[in-house]
Length: 340
Length: 93
Length: 172
Image (tube, rainbow over the protein chains, first blue to last red):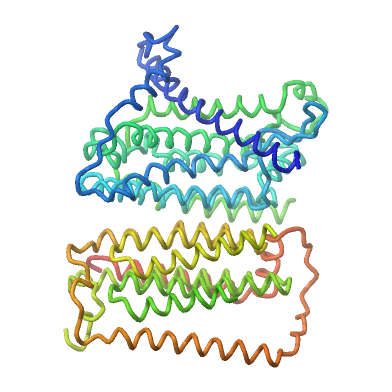
């Protein structure tokens, strides 16, 4: 009873709270890093070195007036941010932060659950997340958000195809869809998949950037385009939900890329006797370190690269990434049959 | 199985009663889903994975049919500006 | 016991949303109810032990096909809904009657097979599969016994893709 109900509930509570706190601090991190990249200091007034800035932001957004456009579809208007946020949060159910460890004399697995179609679950949930954007644009009952949301969702579903095809080659390498199984396969094969599948790594990274509407693919929400994109008519807490959903998605993509390509909780070159001292660092610390690297990479890319135009974006997704993903898949299949 | 029969009937009613062609297409999807539920139920009962394989094929066919059907609707809409199936009569263009 | 409750709850939701799909005036709401319907059907699949199919259902149906429907609905969004006025030529009652006829037919078939159960199907000689999970079972069957339908399905999807692109282009 305790093992099957209480512990998962506890894990869910911890993970959700940690995610929400992490997401709000991501906002601060992004503003700081971009500021440093531009030779300025970023938020410094609230708290020492601006640490309490997210609290100020949250309070501001919560007490803002909640405007609903006159002829907007009220139910859909309210539901759209929720539909955006929920998929970003429920993906955490399958991400493994670490293996089974003993805590307080009990075997506790450092992941909420391990379903045997874990990777497929993540991809499907990501594809449901598109609805939030479409419905947000539609429900605003105004031309700019509608057009922006259609463009954004077209971008999302195009890059979804590329990412899914790439993930198939990772599945080919590991032989299992479960996330824990993929990490175990990397353990058994003595190598992180970033070494075995560099092309797939780059493709998933680019696809992940596009999936979360991050620069340089952030056309849907750029302020200079279409007056603010699909969340033009949103204000206050609903707008906050959209933003939080985007950052949560970013953290999800970082975690997924870490698990698939960098070995999840494994130290570099796992399962080799010579580097056994690296196991002294706890597994979940490795996981967070690696995820943090990717988050930093995302922010770094945003500070550096210019934005893609919409047709360039779609051309990149369809004419470059998808053929590359298919070629990668074919090559992986051939190599696996011939050599391994 | 009762569930799948009920869903099937709801889909059939939808196809026959509504005039909006998009809703007709969606009712067809409901019918296909009802069939899938039936297949999965049998697969669960007989402990044989063949039902699931067939259901995958049904999903693939449904996807193809939805894509082509919506293409046809778009082409029709561009020419005649209606989605009322009573007015889509090629014999009375 | 918990499974039975879950099953009845999910079935009620599926049927409820299905009725809402065909009876709502607004097309966009209809599409949204369809999405919810598909999500509940996926939950039903998980309950019946077909996890791979549940994920595929969400990925393809809810995440792909219905998005397509939503796009088309938004591109075709008319100011005047098609059922604004009743068409005198249309006999709606015939539609209901025919549906009831189909239901009666289904009932007759069910009663017939109940009264005379068909002989149990001889299990086809399948190659021994390394069964470790649902996905592996399905995959094994797909790639060994049902390889040809698999290839034909992929050809079908290719043809449908080309057809849809040609149908929807503005000028060829």
